[in-house]
Image 1 (tube, rainbow, N blue to C red):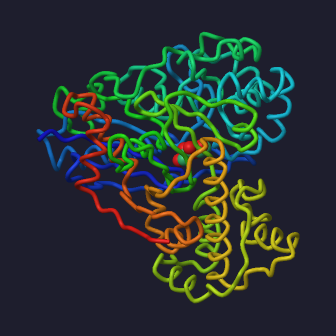
Image 2 (cartoon, rainbow, N blue to C red):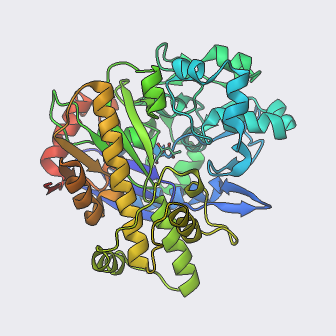
Length: 475
Ligand SMILES: C[C@H](O)[C@H](O)[C@@H](O)C(=O)CO
C-alpha cells in the first residue's frame, strides 16, 4: 500500500507522520514556539524547514520505496511576502504580535463597515486576520510592501521551498478575510480598496492539487526516491482536522477541533453572513471538500499552555499531564472560571505580563475567588472552556434552528478527558473524543483522495471511523 507523509505544524508543536489511513507513525516531533525580537513576535521558518527535512529524512529511511506524496498543513492566517525571485521581504510575523491592535476599527472604517467586510468574506473579526496584518505592514513597513511580488501563506511557502511551485491553497486563503466564499476567488474589491497590489495574490488551488515533485536539492538531502510529489493538502490545519471527523454519510457533525484553539462548528453547503451570525462570532472558512466550515474560534488550550510554560520556566523542570490532571481532579470543588474570549488572554506571556496574573486580574474584576494552586488554575480554565462551548453550541442551534445530540472532539486537545467529561455534562451531549491525530489524518486523507486511492473524502471519514480510537463520554 502507498504511504504518504503529513507535515502538521500547530502553534505549539510540529509533527512529521508517515503512513496510510490504517497505520501511521509520528517520525519526528518538534516545538514551533515563537521568537520575540526587539518587541515583535515572529515564527522561525528556516528552523521549521530544517525540522521538516529532518522528519522527511527519517520517513524515507524507514520506507524508502513506498512513499508517494507529501502534504503540509499549518495554523491559519500567517503569511510571508516574497520578491520576484521568491526571497522573503520580511521575517514571518506571528499572529499574536501586537502590531494589529486597533486595526479592525481602522480597516472597517476604510472598507465601509464591518457588515460589508463580513458579507463579502464571511470571516469573523479577529485582530490577527491576514487582512489586518497586511494593513499593519502597509502602515508600518511601506517599503517591504512595495518590494513584495507574491503573497504566500506559511504552508504555501513551505511547499514552495520543497518543490519550487508557488500557489495559494484554498482552505488557507479562506482564513485571510480577503477571500470571497461565494465566487471562490480573492475579494478583489476589498484588495483594491486597501490599495494592496492585486498581483501579490496568485491563483487559488483546491485542496488536493498536485503541486509537483520535490526539487532535486531537497530530494537529495532527504534521500527521497524520484517521483515523490508535494500535494497542496488541506493546508489550513483546521480544514485537515475537519476532514477527519469520524462521522457517517448524511450526518452534519458538530465538531470541536481541539488544540491551541478550539474551533467549534459544522460543515455547510454555503456561507451564512447575516447580522446574527456576525454578532455571534461565526466564521465561514472553506473545507477540504470546498464546503463551508461554519465555526467559532474559541480560545482553546492556549491559556493552559501559557500557564504551564511559565511554571516550567520558574521551576526549571517539565510538568507532566498526569501530574496536572491529578491536581485538577483534587481541586474540583473550587468554583472559579474565566471567560476565555476575553482579549487579555490572547497574547503570549511576557516577563511583565504573565497569563497567571491575567487570570487573577479577570477573577478580581468579576468577584470570583482567585485560583490558589496549579490545579485550581486548570479548573478555572477548563470550566471557562466548557461554558464557552455550551454557549457557542446554543448560538449555533439558534442560527441553524436545530438541536444537536452529539459532539465530536478531535485533535490533541481531546486527550484532556477532564474537559471532555465536563463538556458532556454541561452540554448534555454525547461526546466522541478522537482521533487525537485528526489533523495529520485529514492531511493523509486529502493526499489519498488526490492520488486516487480514495474515491471521496467521505470514504476517508468512514475509514477513520472504523480504524481509529474514539472514546465516548456521556452526559
Ligand atoms: C489563528 C488560528 O491559528 C486559526 O484561526 C485557527 O483556525 C487555527 O489554525 C488553529 O490551529
